[in-house]
Image (cartoon, rainbow, N blue to C red):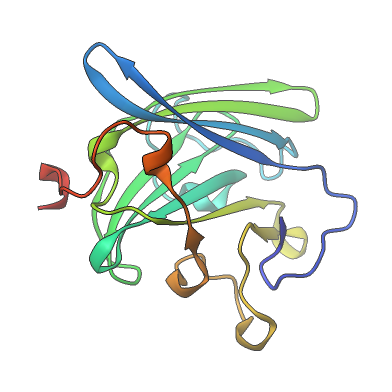
Length: 188
C-alpha cells in the first residue's frame, strides 16, 4: 500500500487481505481475511462489536470496494474492534442500501489485528470484476489514508475512495465456483 497519492509510506507494517470461497449452511460466501497493524487511533467507535456501525470510515478501518457492471459497487469496511459497515452503491457515491448484516470476527493481538468477514455472494454486484482496498487510521493531522491502487499524482487531491477509475481488475470467478453475472434481489 501507499498513501492516497501513491507515495511510499515510511515505516508502515504491511496489510494483507486474502479472499476465499466458503459454503456454510447452504449459504455461499466470499471470505475476506484481513491482517493489519493496530494503531488504536482513533479509539473504538461507540457501536457494539459484531454489528453494523454508521460512519465507520471516521475510525480505524480496512476497506475493500468491489465494482461490477453499470458502476454498481459494494463497500465493505472492517474495524479492528469488531464493527463493520456494508454499503451498496450505484454510480459515484450514491448509496442505496446500508445496514446489511455480516458475520465478522476481529481479534487484536498487540500491535496487529486480524479480521475475518463472511460476505454473502448476493451482496456482490453483478459482474464484479474490479477492486480497490484502503486503510484509514490516525486522528486530526496524523490521519493516514492508504490505498492499494492510489490516485495518480495529477489527480491527487483530498482522499476519495470512490474514484472508480483507479480500481484494478480482479478475477473472483477463479475462487468462486458460481456465476457472478446475475443480479441478486439486493441489486434489483
